[in-house]
Image (cartoon, rainbow, N blue to C red; front, side):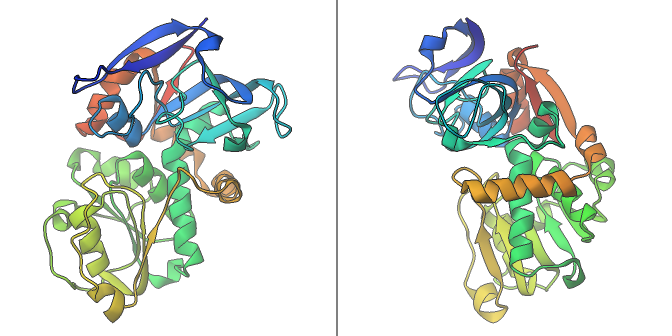
Length: 329
């Protein structure tokens, strides 16, 4: 038997209940690779799912956790053998398929990639889906022609997982970074990751003008709604906005003006079903471009028993950086 965080929700219940339980291997869903999980993480999406604040999970019982890192224990997949160290991000794991907040996981080998040699398992999950998403966003800016010479890059949700890793990556690549945050108590933390300038998120979170002053050459936004609309309105001619989240909301109260008058690009970034080729590229770049001292600074390690409370804290803006879950502690 092994331990896992199990979410249950009865038909008429508004919220799911979560308990750490001992379960059997036979309880796991179908998959051609069995993983001995070492670490998982707590992402914003996990917190929404665990607290039932958003209908991310529709079928119960469910083991949450959209990512994990561990070793292959059994495999009938030709690409992986016993002892291989692997990472999983997304593919509906922790939403539709039992996830990583467990000591064991059974998944399709097509969802896995090998752990880059540079990272320990703990470091890989300190990066996790949030950091991998941040790297996808940076790659999106690069592939659309945004370079450090073009000007300042805005990063919203600066104290969150995506924002923290994005700031560190951009700084390491030579970009000037402006961070948006509503948490003044963490300004020194944000600056320590490489942000040269910080603005209050209130400057972006309220309804704004269809077109504003040209400020940013690009942006990485995990917030959505009015924030994303205002970013587009203040992006420089030909600039690029990489959108990867909806912490403020899934609406986009914008106009076509920034797009047809300034030629800006709004590029959506999906980390869940991103092709394996792109995943490998992102993790390869993380192994060369991420400052590991910054990663250590932004990481806190918790246990399975801490997850429920930590999820509530994350949604209430009481956490910052990255949370790693040691599933065996």
